[in-house]
Amino acid sequence: MKIMRSLCTRCYAVNVHSLPAIQPRLVAVSKTKPVEMVIEAYNHGQRCFGENYVQELLEKASDSQILSSCPEIKWHFIGHLQKSNVNKLIAVPNLFMLETVDSAKLADKVNATWQKKGSSERLKIMVQVNTSGETVNTGCPLEKR
Image (cartoon, rainbow, N blue to C red; front, side, top):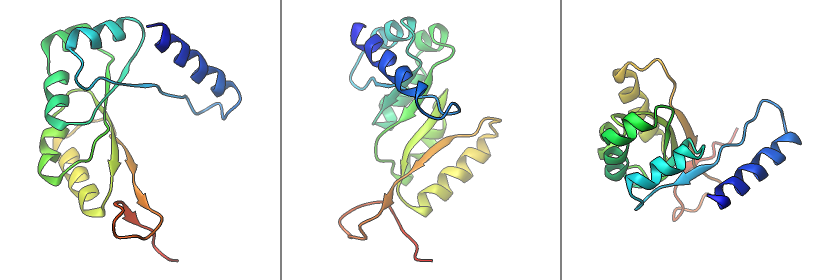
């Protein structure tokens, strides 16, 4: 927990010199960690957690201990999302951010599924852009204007 406090202190110190409207957010990657460790980190002030597998995220976020002990938890999906897993991901309780969407088709599917859910909250999404134009790299292509 000392490391987490140190990182939080550094993040907030950097924020003093940046735009006041931008709040840095430390995302603790909880993959392969047990529920008890997530709750312990939450009890020490950590609110944002990231998972890179949809199934593991769904299981952790739906865990009764986490739901009852961590009411302000915010989940980030940090892995590569396949279209076949969009419905599962959108069903995740307290889903806050999707990092990253790498195609317009995937973005459309995520948007349509989120709208069907009827949530009053907006899902935050980061878009991966293929700036090199190389076909071996994933991401949305840059459009020439």
